[in-house]
Length: 139
Image (cartoon, rainbow, N blue to C red; front, side):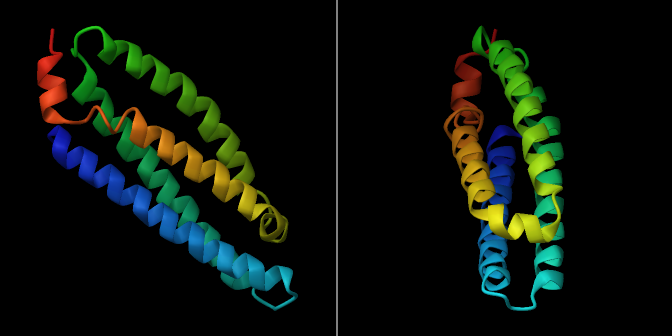
């Protein structure tokens, strides 16, 4: 897949994750108000986990081949991505793995962290997935 298509796919996945986060937040508010919506929340959280997992796999498989061989910054960016993502993803998976009633209370914080993570990706890794940028920096 070329850089432009990879970027479009990954940004689309970010949008889908954001939509799923919004849905989860709405259901979590209902749970916090005492409504019987735990089953709905668990289903929405499962879809969020699936979307996050799919995105992580796509990201790993698409970005690495596009940046390998880019002069100077490609290898450095890959190393940074791997290092940061491992730590961040482990922390997010631990947070998303909590019971739904616990997440109902903590979801706003998790959503804030996940949104900040995606925004950082968009400023760094996804910003360089511009075919012109990659070609200008090929070794």
